[in-house]
Length: 109
Length: 114
Image 1 (cartoon, helix red, strand yellow):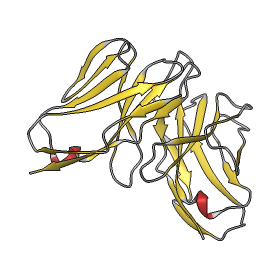
Image 2 (tube, rainbow over the protein chains, first blue to last red):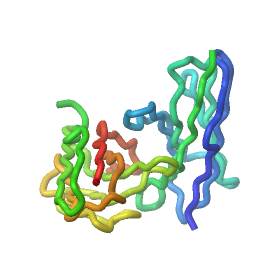
Image 3 (cartoon, rainbow over the protein chains, first blue to last red):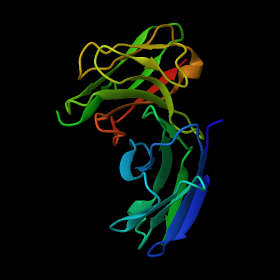
Image 4 (cartoon, rainbow over the protein chains, first blue to last red):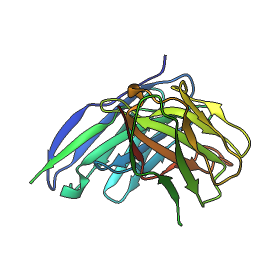
């Protein structure tokens, strides 16, 4: 079957680093997306990985291992505005996205 | 407008009533999607359209219908609303011409069915 797993909630301290993991089992694979969603708002795009390895974009990095069905989102120098839910989604061969339930990240001062 | 818009922002609806949620994008994206988002669950695809004139069923299509008469508009209709359709509905669009594309989301419609 198709399944995407992420931790439900994580807590971190302002200025620190946090890693949000995502594991997936899908029938096809055409890449993995990470989105950020602030409470009451729409999801917004953070990153897209289709090849194995690390993609860095400012304070945010995303890693993919296709052989392990595993990805993580790394957030550095955490700021209070990073408090949000982080959604992992896998795109299958038909380009439709299968979404994880999201990880709620709480940043404490 | 720039991007993707949805209307209404929120709605309270009596069970059994018909309701159409509107979605319009001005990015000339070929693909459009309707999702519902419920607490504790991931975004679930209701219906999608890969190009104007074509639509397809997603994971949870029952009780919903869509049309794609042109590139910009992708309305979602609930023929006879039921309380289990209480949810936040997001419309999204993407350019899939060269492969999977980033999906841009509208602000959402919060629907309550009583």
